[in-house]
Image (tube, rainbow, N blue to C red; front, side):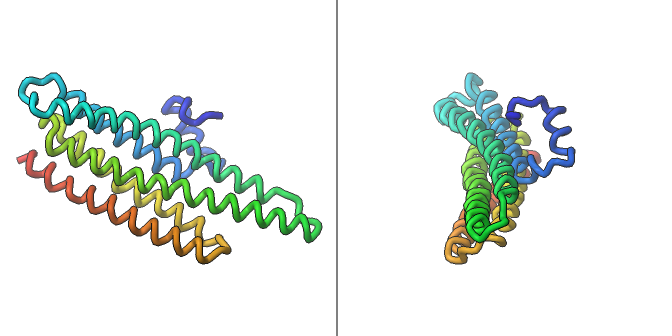
Length: 209
């Protein structure tokens, strides 16, 4: 089942089911896709408006970046669910002999590592989305400023949600050196995203007065 082909109603029903995937990681990526779509919308509402002629070129670029980012987030949504399913399949491997136990353990560790890297990539992409939201607020159609602000809020919340999944998967990773490196990468990526998103909110408030 391809999650991104489901209707909104069907996706929510699948999310609410007893199946553990899709879960928080996929929802975080979906939040990113929604935010990117909002940023693209603001850009489209700016291009062609004579009042914003000086911003057309920049908004066309923003529109294209946001459209590409939306597709990227949808791919991450599917990858996140698939990575969890791969881990569950690894857990089901036979463990009757020492060789089987070793193969099962290796497969589980590889799946865990992959499952940590996907939401880490989501956090990184949220930084890009927050940057686009900031630009959309600063230079886009003022009538859509709250839509761009919503994109920034989604970037912030979704980045924190994805970070939870990275940290949870790293807890069971046996290679502590790799786990430590990924935690550092996560901290850096999350700091960039949160700082950028937090710059947007005062800009929105200024334009609502």
